[in-house]
Length: 415
Image (cartoon, rainbow, N blue to C red; front, side, top):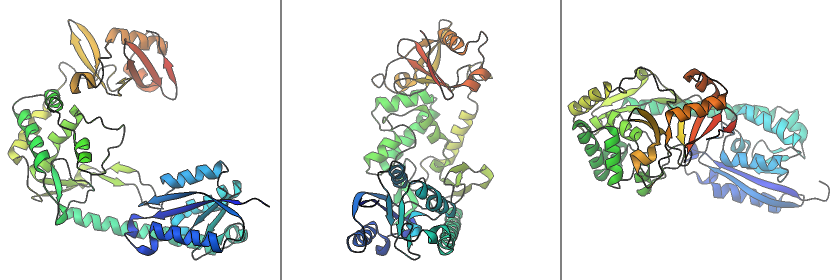
């Protein structure tokens, strides 16, 4: 680095737990870091970029801008990382050890933290590699995060037991009460749609027919409706097209919140370090009645559940050969199965069930699909176990061509 300016990346993180504490604000962290660079940094420097994770925990390294910073470090575009304190970068002792003692040295990258303990891996490398103060501080930060997580979990469980709503967004059909964010009140416009869905189901309409009616009326689906209300709501997966589908209708028809029963705690985070969620057994859910106004009388809600419980695929006791594997290559929607004059066809569900302007048919005969898959898999005896073992999904293109997506490999079949 002799004669060359340091390529500096500022890392700033504000946790949700920090609230609105001015001393920990993004603006204040930026001011402290820039003041250090301009007045106390002893070598030439160039500011490459700022990497800001606002409202994220430091207990794992999956933060978007932290990962962007690490990408720049590995590429050699940043060789000096500057942050306010160790805990801004790491609240996980294992991560702290990996980055300070392995990745940054391997990438010849300087790490500076201005708080206590002061860290500068270039001016005082032995403090990082051999000293005790920095590892001990990392352990304390890790334990603080564990205690905070346990305290938050106990508080949330207490709220669930009392029937207080703790979700970030109210279920479709409801809104959070202005005077009490832990209580649900009907949202008049969305509540009317929910009541119509239940009324049509009770009248004998199928979920497919209800979905088609909702889309024909131009009613936005729950995700699009919330976005239209100015809420920063997004479901995981592909961006919504604003159209309803049968799965969304089914979730509404099965949700006891519309009968006045608040059910929470269906999932939980693995740990304060592993933010992945896992399902919770139904017997451990928190179910509290009478917490809010029901949109559907409980007796009618129960009738709908009894109707849905007896529905079966006509004449089928086992899944079809391609069940759950077929997707439209253009819109990503599932392919639906239909029999006509003794022949089974698959059609794009977006075209058939949502809107004929949203996609095209992408029709393929089942026997032709079976032949294409058998040739691609080099077998004369195509069965479901073989498909599940080797195939991730099958994309159907317009014109009846199947694109076989293997597990870890993609191959095109001949029409």
